[in-house]
Every structure is written in C-alpha cells, then in structure tokens.
Amino acid sequence: MTETCYKSFIGGRYLANGGGETLAVVNPGTGEAIYRIEIADESVLEAAVNAAQAGFKVWSAMPAAKRGRILLKAVALLRERNDDLARIEVLDTGKPWQEASSVDITTGADSIEFFAGLAASLEGNQQDLGGDFYYTRREPLGICAGIGAWNYPLQIACWKAAPALACGNTMIFKPSEETPLGALKLAEIFIEAGMPPGVFNVVLGAAEVGAWLTHDTRIAKVSFTGEVATGKKVMAAAATTLKDVTMELGGKSPLIIFADSDLDEAVSAALVANFYTQGEVCTNGTRVFVERPLYDAFLGRAKARTEANITVGNPMDPATNLGALISKTHYALVLDYIEKGKSEGARLVSGGHALAPKGVEGGFYVAPTIFADCTDDMIITQEEIFGPVMAVLPFDGEDEVIARANNTRYGLAAGVYTKDIRRAHRVVHQLEAGICWINAYGASPAEMPVGGFKQSGIGRENGVETLKHYTQIKAVYVGMQPIESPF
Ligand code: NAD
Image 1 (cartoon, rainbow, N blue to C red):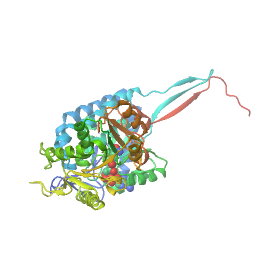
Image 2: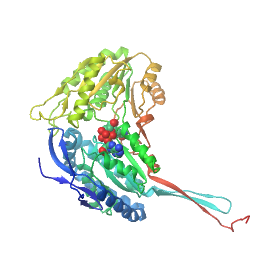
Image 3: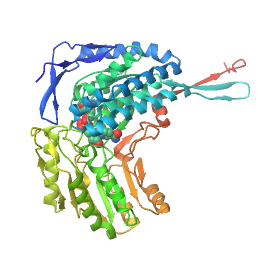
Image 4: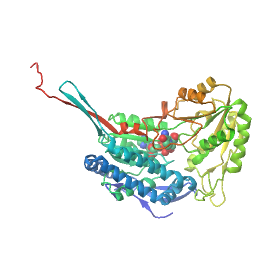
C-alpha cells in the first residue's frame, strides 16, 4: 500500500484533521488498497462551514456572468485533464477505462458548461399593482451540502456543483468514502479556474460525516445521491432544520420491448441497460419485459451477444467492457442475489457466477447474468441489485405490461421499444417514472432534467428546471404612496 493520504479540501487548501483518523480506499479491480483518506472531524467540518460562509459572501455578490466564466474555465480544465481524471475514476470505481475515458468526465463537464451558460439568465419578474408594484428576485439558498454515491463519483460532484454554484450558492461536498479522489481533483480545478476559496469544499469520510452535514443549521440544502434507505435518513435529518432536499435515489426500472421492435436494437438497449458500468447505474432497466412473440428470439440474441461481446477483465485494459464491482461486500451481495434468483426458480440463461480474470484475480468480478421466466414477485425483480443481473419477463398486452411495470415502490426510469409511435407515447404517458426513453436507453444529456417519481427521488438534476431547486424567490412590494393605516 502506498503512503498517500488525502485530506479534506477546505477554503482552497487541504486541511488536516485533529486526530489523524484515516480510512483505506481499495481499487476494486485488484482488491488492493491504493491510498488513504483522513476522516473529517468536528474541526474540519467547522472550518468547512466557515469557509463556505465566507465564500458565499464573495460568490453570491459576483455578477452571474462572471461566475459563468469561471465555471467555463473549469470545464476547459476538466476536458484537458480527461485522461488523468478518467484514470482516477477507473482505479476508484473498477469501471472500464473505455467508459470512464469517454463518458464520466465529459458528462460532468457538460453539466457545468450548461449551467455556466444559464448563470446570467436568472431573472425575476415585475407586476404593476395600480401604482404600487412588486418584483421578484431569484436568490441563492446559501450553503448547499452535496452527498455523493460511488458509481459516478466525479460526474455526481459536477452535477451537484454545477447548478448550485451557477446560482450563487456555495457547496460542501462529501464524496462516497469508497471513491473520494475525483471530487478533490474537481475542487483543485475550481480553484485553478479562479473560483474564490470556500465556494466548493470537500469533506472526507463515511456516514457520520454525511449525517453531520444533514443536521447542521447553517446548511440550507442537501442534495443527496444514494440508496433509498439512506435517502430516508437524510431527509428525516434535514427535516430537523427544514432544509431543502434533492434526492437522487435507486430504482428497479422497466424496459418494455414490444414484439414489433427491431430485435438487435432492443437487445442492444437491454445489454446497455443492465451491463453498462457492470450494472451499477441507478437508471438501469433491470426488469426487461418482452412481448411473447419476440421472447425466445430476444433471449437467444441477448445470450449470444453477451457471451460473444462482453470482455470482463482489468478495468484499465482498453479492451475491457465490463469491470469490477465496487467492493467485496457489494460483490458478495450481488452473488447472493444471483443465488436467490436460482433458488426462486428463475431460469439462468447466461452467467450466474463470480469471475477471476487473469492478472486481476483479487478484484470483485461477476459474470454478466441473464435470468429468464422471471415473475413479478421474485426478489430479483423487486429489489435493486446494482450489479450485472438482467431479469427478463414475458408479457402479453399493453395494459398488462403498464400495470406490471408500475408495480414497484421505485419510479426512477423506464424505456419502451416499439415501432408504433402512438403506442410509444401512450405507454410512456402512463409509466410512473421520472426519466423515460423511447427507442433509446440510458442517455442523460445535461439539457434533460433527471430525477425520480415515487421512492426514487425528489427534485431534479440537470435541465433548466434544476435552477428552481437551487434558488428561492424573494418578493419585494414597493409602496408608491403613503401607507394606509387604521391606527
Ligand atoms: P449509499 O446510500 O450507501 O451512500 C451514499 C452516500 O451517503 C455516501 O457518500 C455515504 O457515505 C453517505 N451516507 C451514508 N449514510 C448516511 C447518513 N446517515 N447521512 C448522510 N449521508 C450518509 O449509496 P451508495 O451505495 O454509495 O450508492 C448506490 C446507490 O445510489 C444505489 O441505490 C443507486 O441507485 C443510487 N444512485 C442514484 C442515482 C440517481 O441519480 N438517482 C445516481 C447514482 C446512484
């Protein structure tokens, strides 16, 4: 193990904690510890709030166009350092280099670019009241806490920072303790781009550090990405000080494939929706409903393409297109779900076991797995597995599949494949999901708002819509004549 130990990044510099308590970060691709982080203690957290308060004074008073220009400089630096940052993401998460080098950094940069452009567009309105009038101002909230998951560490940090900072807020971001380095690099880049110290701070640590942020009275909002169960705790804690919340939580999303679909396109969508980032994507379409006339052909093609085209191996190898799961614990959990699928009577079509690719035997690899003949009540069709496990279910009609697709506490995403344009829209309009794709799956451009219905979330990220979640309206009444008084 190397001696490198990263500290929290507060007020534009790295800050040591008082007690020296640390945590190891493991490369999931090899199973080896690669560096350590210092856990933020009370003194670091106090410093973070003080820095964010000082940063807010400067940042919120700055002309919005100037904030936008600084954010755009950060975008340029992110793009320039794409490969260095992608390497960090691969080593921290175990995802394939193929993905990280082409998607993770660019989609983070895209979001900052989008909100940088919108920064100067924030405006209020004015209404005449017959002499008197009122106007509104869209003002920042103050200090926003961002709490991230481990699957898209740098992208999540960018997606939270972008709207928050464009609107004039400051942020204290806590990355997942399993993947903390990307957020620290983003903090360095913001400073290099000319952002005042204290505008974007990173505190390191696990649940206790996150919980501290959710309770602090000086923090105005919490934007959280993670599991539903954690989201409930975060929201309950935020309620103690009536903080605004954005919740980006888990899902068990349906992908509905009608019999008139192009078979290969539908199979492509199902493979992307289940095996991209080794299945660790919140919007994954893990319940694949296939209309009966296409069912056998779909399974045959999905199996053949999975077994011929998926290369599991060292995530840094450019040929690898399915990497390692985030941790040994998560790997054991995913394998346990696979065993449950087998014992519940789902038919195993492909995979269904762990893998130990040559040269990286210590990593946490699971074969891409396809189960057929799944039923709605099975554990593998009800719970979010967050691994490369596809559950395929046959269906016979439109109304039936809509009811079954909606029969879940989640409502993050959904996909529909069909050549019938009217049916596509008719079905999508009845699906209880915040993000829907028609003849597509997974794309999430910065322009498009994303977030969940039901227990998959509250609020949105990306899209113009998100500006509302990082600002508050101030109404100002202006009296143009002497005030009437009964006293
Ligand atoms: P998690 O809920 O275990 O942890 C998320 C973050 O919360 C981590 O930083 C963790 O340290 C912190 N945390 C834990 N307990 C806390 C507490 N009591 N108070 C405050 N913070 C606390 O989630 P994870 O395992 O890191 O991520 C996987 C989950 O994230 C999946 O469910 C996935 O669907 C979801 N996810 C959702 C989206 C989305 O946009 N909807 C995106 C990515 C991931």
